[in-house]
Length: 588
Image (cartoon, rainbow, N blue to C red; front, side):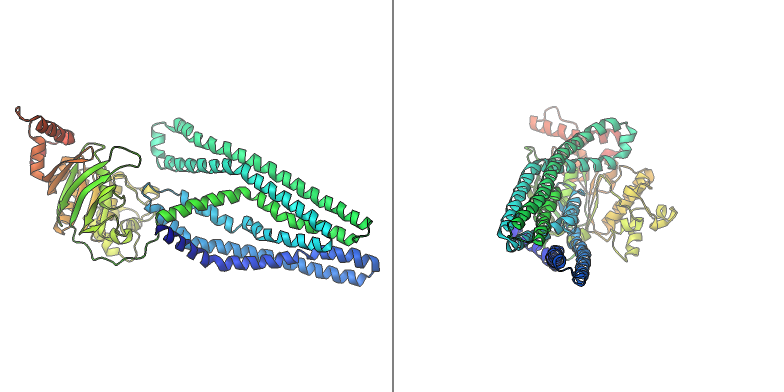
């Protein structure tokens, strides 16, 4: 079914661009007909004008030739513009789709798919596709040579076959190093992006030299394989150019032989040289653009696979806003190829308006649970339901209206504060201000030079960590969501920010919003109804806050069973650090 969806989607895209390519093909037809003007001019000059001495005929033939060449140049310009607009149309139909599919990928998003698409689009609108349009005309020129004389036609056919075999040899020699170079380049670009995102850490801890060594591995691999492909392709291009020039000269010799034997005229001899050059030129151009062709083909296959893995779904029936009943049933999540699951058979249920605090040591699976709850990651087994609907199958655009999410790694987009809080929606000023007030950041925003219209820069560079986190909190509560998931929402907050977060949680509770809060600080859980304790991806305890806290702080009885003692020690290990640093943890 997915294969059919993929095929239909791609077919629709190319059908929409078909008129551009048909028009370019029509112009190519006219251009290649006009290319015959120069050989015909030479044929007429040598066979008619020279023998008759007619200046009038020479002038008229020259005028016709110039008109044909002018039309040829005009058609070439128009064909280039048509292909450029075909690329623009292709971009309009697929670029956004590629970005959307990249965002949906379970293994993370990067700009590589968009670069792949641009590689393909540029080839489809550049000189490479023009050479392919001209290539089918090579047999036509060979046929014209055969009409002039069979020996000329057979020589041209043999020449074309030799160059075709050389083109296949070039593909065989270049394919693997070019493929390796493309893969290494993709890895290098990805590592570069990651390094630039963490430039502050790199500079602060003097990691530049070590990081550059690591960066150089893929870079050197890319350059080595690229150089190998370039050397092979360059040698083949030079060899093919030599063969084409040699064949053009040799056909002149064949023509001279025919003239000596009185089997052809001098005009045919020179016209044959031009015709053979035109017949072999597209082959040479295709070989010259072969690396671009291979790169474009590989890039398109990656884009096609991406679209197939994230098919375009028909717009489903829009469900009403959920009440916020969250049910987690046997949730298991494992990394592909890993024997140990990140989450194992996690089950719990929250009623609308309940707030649960999630605790556990590092690596317990808390952040993975958060991603599962908002549906950005598909579970290996089990299901997360919001009002009985599976969040993993709920279309993102529809589910996102009812969900607020503050991830552990905060990302603020390079736009205004208002656009970030309002999730880039239009005409939602009142909702933006209400969300900022709920997050306790409204007054801080007003103190900025441009208020809500302040440009935050890449990643929110102009904002402090605490303000950035509170703006992300405002974005999470924007639009009256039914479920809000907060992963370490106070990691960058001061005492004022902590109080604002507590007030925000209280207001969400009053509004009947279901909230999941992940934190290492037990003091954050003053307003929570329940606590979920995780260790090694499994649930150790779940229940009302006071009961779980009492269990966490209860000493192990001397006569407790071995199983009870193990469980008690595990529970203590889950939040022992927080309890030791929080005087009122037991009464929170």
